[in-house]
Image (cartoon, rainbow, N blue to C red; front, top):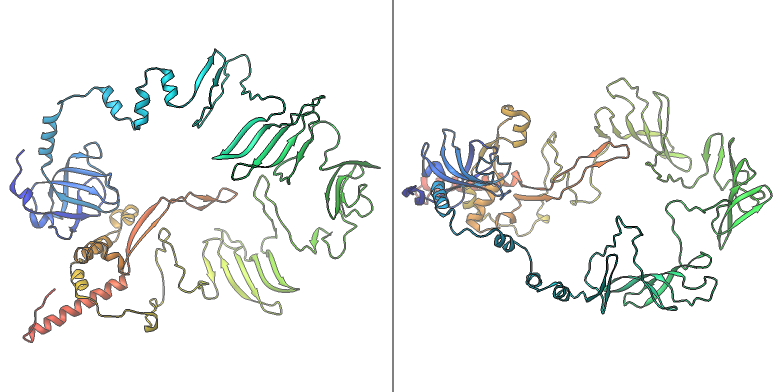
Length: 595
């Protein structure tokens, strides 16, 4: 296929934000390039190349034409979709005039079948290995291979064992011992002379932990050679033995504290204890917790009730007994928790510990009645958080969540915050303001407000005291702004939701503003201007509460360009003002209209 002269005559490249696998609407020439319509005109056939900027893996080359609406009508010849039309996703793409795709395909066909390489050589060439790896492949036999890997020599090798002698096996990341399908169990034996340590060391450059047989002498009656767990300092020197188990008696000795998250049980019949077992008159299965201040005893009090007290027989001084008929606490005073009439008073703190399910405090009330929590100062109400007494009229209406505030006498002032159960709307009686001035945004790059309803516009700080380096807008920046084009467009998500009913908008494309400014002032100049913004965010997994209800949906990682339109319009006004001044000067007989 011949290459026509106009293929190489013009530098033609446009930006594109359209989506799908059909005709694509082109978005205008890039700085320093021409548009297809200007260089070729409608109806001319030309070779094109499309490459994704946000997704470089998406590309397509082919032959195309422009239709009456300025869209690129595509006939793909090669693409990332196996040669078919690529369904381009939302994001910036570049479309350029290139060599004829047919000419490239002809070159490909001409080279096909030349100098076929063997599959074996191709496979070896594709190995992502190092010089050391290739050198090991060149070893003459297994012994030479082991020597290259510094594994030492294998002294004996039988059907059921392999022993390594004459050195240590180092550099291993995993060592497995398998006896699957064999008559005996799989095991690793570590042997040492009597009085010597035999065990496994775990370290980070040097030893940090050692688990195994201690060095204590074996003095008969199964004594000695106890099981130990020892720790080591950062320099590898011995530090302590926090755990040892006597081989003769099974006694466990711990030199540090014990933290238990679960159940501690004693095997066999009898009592279960922590530190000590005790049995007194009418008392059995007693557990003792002892501190420097004294002991706490818990056990079966009299065969029918369970007691907690300060002495072993759980009688005198006992401060709580639990039985089938309820809870009795005769030893409590006004300073302690009191249990009476189904209520608990006098507590300084109440904690709900999470078990197999989420911890929850349930407060029930009849329909049309309050249910909530009161926060007081002394006996005077200050705040109440509660379910409202509004009737439930259907459609999830009523029983809203309400936060009331109270004055110094405890009288309700009014609702500070209300969440409607039917809609989830939050209503505030006072102003909503950040705790820290000029430090928080309203919304996030990945979690935007769709619309803000307001009676008037926002007030932006413009005080001279808050500004520095104040000066005239440079002509170079105004020249660059003159290259920016206002556009008509529709939003991708609106088209996806509404189809052809999606509304049209007029405005700017952030990437086009960036490219126009960078073309005049140098790459990276645009992002130093406050009018251009770029945000990125990481992926987040979905979040659900203890009952499985969705709190926050999953979010993919992404990035987005944006504009501060008030600054863009200010720059547009400055450009228009300069242009008007030049026109007036030209009309009065001096100067030129300029750009």
